[in-house]
Image (cartoon, rainbow, N blue to C red):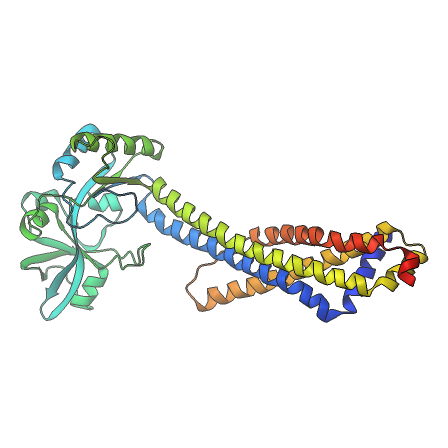
Length: 402
């Protein structure tokens, strides 16, 4: 009961000077609001990216031409990955669920009659459909016979189909890629936007042999996609493939690889690392705002102690102990930070809701910002409230009444 009475007295003191109380809260409100928005956007961004990364496949290994440590598509005009490498991998790992080699051209003109566009052309093996889990919604997929006969057939992505044929059915029609005429034998199911923001349906699929010999005039691959039966062996198989390609390409340290071997674990690790680093940096900035708010809180409380000397002396004269005075001022400090935390959280969630409603910025609602904000508010209130509370408690009652 005594503690509750002291807390009530603290709230009454705060209510008697509302402007000063609000000024003490401003730093806390801004810091908690910033922390709430930062953590919500960070969590939402990571969740969105990881959902899109799941398209990569959690039992999948990608081998891409060209060296380097960054994630990304196969480098253009790099000839380090060849069909013989794909054959060697097949021979070394006969138990793979599926494997598909491919070569690409990112921007190639395509036209049908008067309509024309640009598309990413993928020359691939028939297993490409299973490797990417990307099948046709109309017509027929690529076959081994298409590859063996260097057939001039293609499968259109949904966006290219719309650009060239509109509402008409393109199956059985002809398109021209570069200077080569192709028969449309199917239309790919729509995939939408990639993790990098590009339209995945702006592509055309053709047989690998046709692409290498008739369209691209090259002998090298851009990528090989492998799907395992069990993801538990993912890292082991990726390491063995890396060792095999180094042996075939005669690569020894300190020379860097002229290829990349990436798994879903690599992609997820990079995404989480970047997201975590940004979250920590931005959270540190929000914490700095809270510390500034705490310094302001302490200074204004010290001024308040100086102005309330007679009140403190009177309370000591009628029986209040040093502990009572100390508890009252600490309670005032905690009340300010906790109310500021609640207002800051409300402001932060309002901003998050506005961003979700009116922008494309992803945000995830969780208890983490509220819990962290509560802990920080308590810490700031205690740490920066102790010094003013100690000064108030140490005032001598007789001197204070003078």
